[in-house]
Image (cartoon, rainbow, N blue to C red; front, side, top):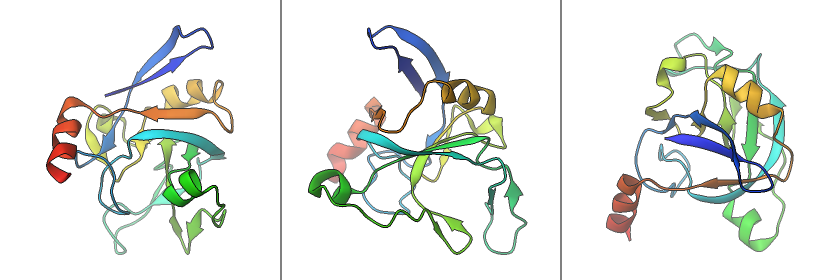
Length: 156
């Protein structure tokens, strides 16, 4: 699993290891622990250094910096993508963050594994380097692995 950044001529600038959703196959519904496949625009670049996340549920302490230094939010709403509509730009609900993106992590040992809830995770140093090249509207292409394709065929 890797994230590759290409320049405008199609040459590879960087390739970074990543983590993706815990379950294989294309994301079908919110909360299914899969990473969406397809072409998505970056709709926000957010400083996430102070964000917290409770990985164990409501009774465990939240981890500050769980999302690393940057969160590149991608538009994955099928309504927005295919019907040219705009949904509520709020990215939080109470103390929970909404949506999917590419972000860092407080635990770099998860990079290279299927361990996220659907986002693409990177090492913090890698996302900091990538941030210098990312812009609003930039297209992100998420391709399935061979294993993901097998799961997708079983679902169809």
